[in-house]
Length: 220
Ligand code: GRF
Image (cartoon, rainbow, N blue to C red):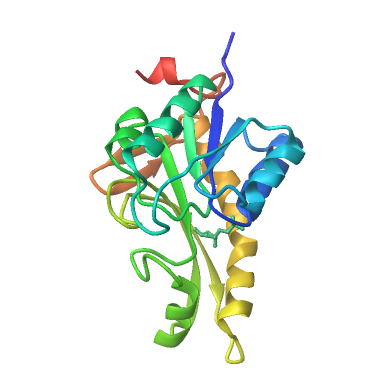
């Protein structure tokens, strides 16, 4: 019997992308199942959402707010994800750089969503910086995660127009709408085993008849 792809979400804040993934799962369009949520913030609204959705959740004490987590916190997250038999890790507003423990535990199996058309505007406040720079088109990207800041191979992107009366907030809201569409789509591609990475390029293969999904066991 085919095993479903199990997704763990790491989130630091609001959790609207977590909610979008959950809604897609409920609608049967995710091709995968959410099974775990972890956060570096005990009071993150994303954890309240996890409770509402009945998902096992973990909050770690990750050390000073910015940058990398402590090694202990990262190991705790890895142990939690493994215990929940997570195949794919989705960062959804997770404000920490990943270190070796997570990257080695989930090679080729960590995705992130970022609110810019990468490689432009990686890092914080991407929407405000895009607006200040004067771009006419903005958007979001789902990419594989590596050790850098928003530097991994790009899986999918969506664009939005920039309006002359935009503020960082109105632009961010327009981009967020697209994020909520794009992330479930990218997760589904991964879950269906349709993503092939060659150098920096990610190729999307046609769906193969009769095969849906891959699990961690199948990949290793
Ligand atoms: C999103 O804009 C995402 O692209 C970025 O952080 C924000 C998280 O929002 N990485 P939410 O917590 O998913 O609502």
